[in-house]
Image (cartoon, rainbow, N blue to C red; front, side, top):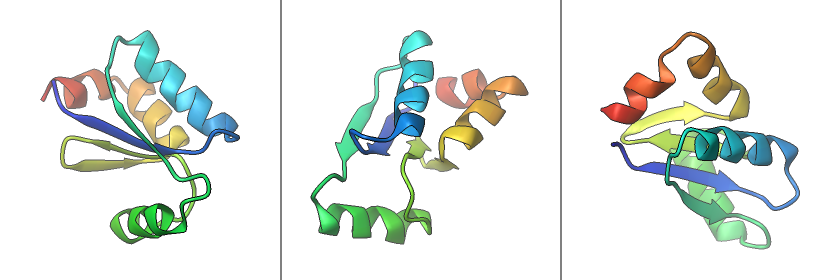
Length: 84
């Protein structure tokens, strides 16, 4: 199974939804919180090209945010990406 990294914030409902989806699928993930950590958020933004959270990586693939994760799930591609 691929390594999953989720950059998140405690006060973000989209982060909660994304983490819930991953947890419901039994996926272990590394959560990196950006709250009060401007350098961590800046590093995330540089890697992702976006400043919003969540930002999700599955293996070397930058999935994007919560809506992107759920879009992969809707079209049946999330499980394949997780299994790679």
